[in-house]
Length: 269
Image (cartoon, rainbow, N blue to C red; front, side):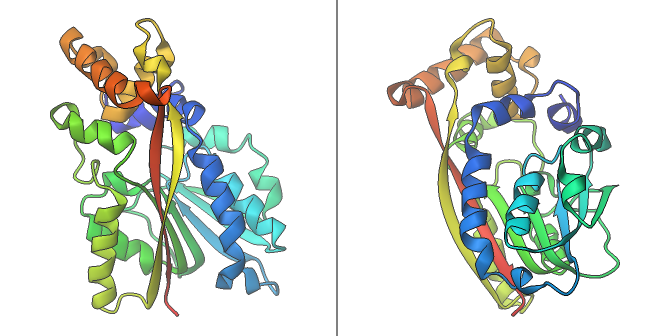
């Protein structure tokens, strides 16, 4: 399974994760509670420029746009994603009608290019496939006056990936956590790349009960997503080991996997 299969195929493991997790709603609650403190919410004389790296089908983007509009911020939006197949679904959301400008461009954390810094760069769960975490962070930070980064913590998806590291389809940063991001940000701050940052850690939950069912497509896709690996490529013994781990870890929690979410706010002022 390639990364394109995880995110870009019409039926893909990422969709199974979206259906099973409360992560998006937890993030939306944080946005609505915190955006009012940010400089972007003081821009009213023009549309504020927002660049969303790893926008996908817009499941998170729409929540960000809606939160900004709630604060009377007009938005000129650019979504960037390496899998343009997802743009078709994005265009079916109401996002385009909620913004002053709406553009979708192909690119990723290592290749995107901006003509000038945006008022806000939003990068949610896109750093796992960066060639080099610190370099990608530096590029993102220099691309926006304010930056919001979202990255998984140790509990949740990463706990499965770390337990079955030998089965994970590896990108260089695919098993990183928000702790790794925090460490790299501290190095960049020490180099004077940005002025200040905040690190918030929230907890969502993911229903992993379907992973225990032999014939559940949802469960198979979740396992694929956790490992960034095709379910069909796993042996019977490997699947049994994964299910045993899930049963021992999350069975006592009614198969509700705690999912740590790290959110970073970065400003140049």
